[in-house]
Image (tube, rainbow over all chains, first blue to last red; front, side, top):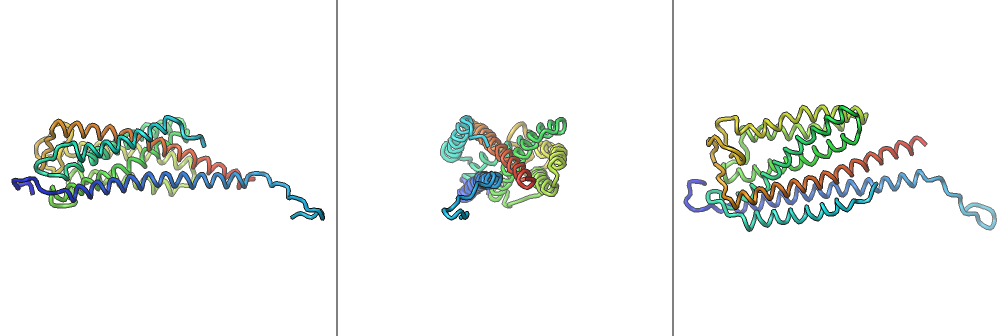
Length: 65
Length: 234
């Protein structure tokens, strides 16, 4: 390729390179976001489990719902 | 978990802007290289990701040493964060190098000094996560990770220097004096050097931003684990 006189057309490889860079970085950023969201959901669920059981509302007949 | 600090929000915006500017400069402002053509523009991202990846692997040595001295899990989180992000950047550098090599060397891959040492370094750090995942005890896992990070970091200077030590190599020397034995010598113009330096600076800031996010993720992960133990115990 480099024995040619004129500049070769390698734009296809350039586009492929930039596409790969965008995809890899986007996937990694998304993975951080998704892991963060899942952990926050887990934390909320654990907080709910940890809360003491609330008293059940009582009906007119004195029976719990 | 603490709400996102203002400094991190500013860093997020700065990272996005710097990334956009790097792409713009590399694609539209940097001059076209005469012998390689447009594919040479991949080099700005390739070199930046390789540089930041290697720096991250070396930087992980600091929290590893501190952890081994004081056994504070905070340093383990920092070490894991640095190695994880560096692994992604370094893998990207290897893939981009391969894409550049296809038109330049007429092959996707060649087992020459730089490519071989880089592949070994990347595999060493992928193994770091696989081996860590096999250890249940957090303290043992952190201690093992710290020692492993120290040992694996030896591969980074070897990778960096490989093309300077080996007489016959295909990979061009981008920084510093070349022996002139590389098949393609990287004689960059001033405009190319400026864009390259900007790209390295931009990716360094992106690395710091991602590192901060990853450390926060580690903190949250540890808080969830602690809460799980508490809930199961009660």
